Amino acid sequence: MIKDVLNQIHSKLNSFDLNFLQHMPLKEAKRWLIDLNGVGPKTAAIVLCFCFGMPAMPVDTHVHRVSKRLGFIESNVTAEDAHEILESKVDPDIIFPFHMYLIKHGRDTCKALKPRCVECNLSQICPSSSVY
Image 1 (cartoon, rainbow, N blue to C red):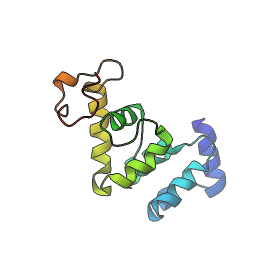
Image 2: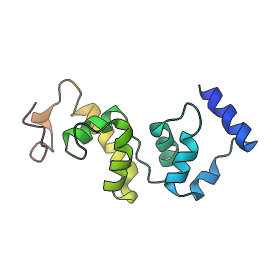
Image 3: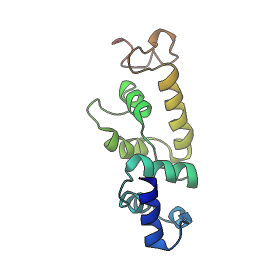
């Protein structure tokens, strides 16, 4: 799949250089990447956030789960829809560290099957802490 995406990029640009994306509005840059076969919203957001420092919110399983439990997104929101919702709610200047902290919190404390609510620093403000 990676090879296919690279072939698509090279056939469009005659190059592998994606630096032009950092000069585009976020939605356009995201759309350009998502239009590549095999690239979804998460991969597009990772490229834009990690490579170019753009305020794109990558939503993986940890970010999705923790965001739902903390009430940042509704429980029925899909991971795909969560990208735009979280981007609209989080200050663009802190999207990268916010993303990284949610992942760490999801791995260490707010685990999928047995969340450690008793040990959690956010339990007093977390709407889900009483559930677990």
